[in-house]
Image (tube, rainbow, N blue to C red; front, side, top):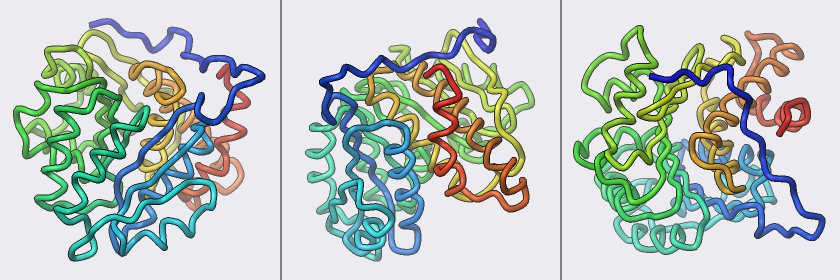
Length: 287
């Protein structure tokens, strides 16, 4: 077990003077449902503020207008829905969109159902691009016991302790670093990074881990994890490997939370405050 907590943070590649939006990552975010459109919208806003060149959100038609209303800066694709979430007819279009993306994130606001489980299974096994798995996609993954052993490419899992318990079948232990590494080690191809969220978030592969030192209790608020999902996807889309993207995103996410807490206090901090403080957080880091 190698601890990398004190090693220098990863940095983003320097942008060329003649670069264009396609050079900075085509990010596809999959999620949302009626009543939970805000979750995937937060991911989209965070991906934009984390430098993604192009962000597309695939969401059920019933949620598309709400998702689009959050920002004119990302694109939305409304897909077939049933009972306010994705229907079977949405699976193939999502897979086609994923093949054209540099990185995909899935889960925020999706709601649990069999369609989500089928979609997660196919993306996890066959998508060659990096895939960030969060929220209801993690809960679907927990019902696919062999999926973790067969990733089609780099994977980042972002469970909170409850989701971790569902993934592993046991409560999250006090020794979280070893537990996160053990979960990553279920992947024999060593392509999986686990971000075990909470105070002192753990970022782990099967061989190393780091404990994050930024952040505060005010970040224990709905939507904060959705922001992190968009950040990890954006950084991976800009060329960082999964370990580096996850480690840098978690650090900057916590730093943005600390800046927000200084302005609003921990009690009043909400997830949109994190997005609003990302520009300053990135400027203050060697990114």
